[in-house]
Amino acid sequence: MRRVLALLAVAALVAVPAAALAHGELADARPAPGAIVGGEVAEVELRFEEELVGEGLAVVVEGPDGSELVAGNPKIVAEVIARVELEPISAAGTYRVDYTATSVDGFVFEGAYLFTYNPGAPAVEPFPEGRSSAGVTVLLALAGTTLFAGGGWLLARRQAKRVANA
Image 1: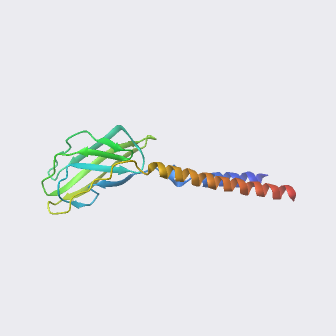
Image 2: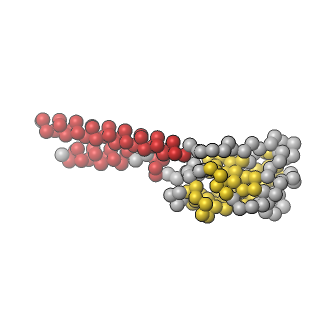
Image 3: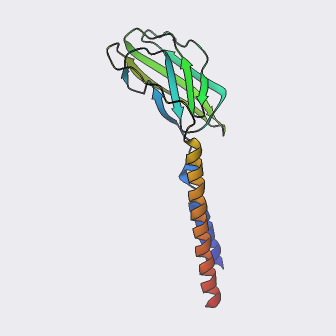
């Protein structure tokens, strides 16, 4: 019986997916970290791996001279996408984006990245509007956990029958 309980305990520990234990982070951005962009840059979009809440959302964009270019408050425009409007960028150089965002489970994302503006470089394409895939990821993690835990339960049950018949 102890073997069965030990096996169940191990199965339960292993069944918890890494995705449930880890928190997401910045998945992508427009302009992207390290990108060289041109055209009209009038906003910054940040795509996270987890659904966001509006509380604590902050995005600051600094130009090459250290001045802030944000022209409005950041907004959540899709479950995992935050957007802030900027004063249109016209000066070539390196720009810094600092961000703070909070996921629905209370985890706070903080980070910064750089991008370079060169008027002759290709323009930035915004993210497509609409729903994110964050819900699908959660459902897949849940399904995997359920299948794994069920397999562990069946294995433990089979082992218990073997012990009882011995």
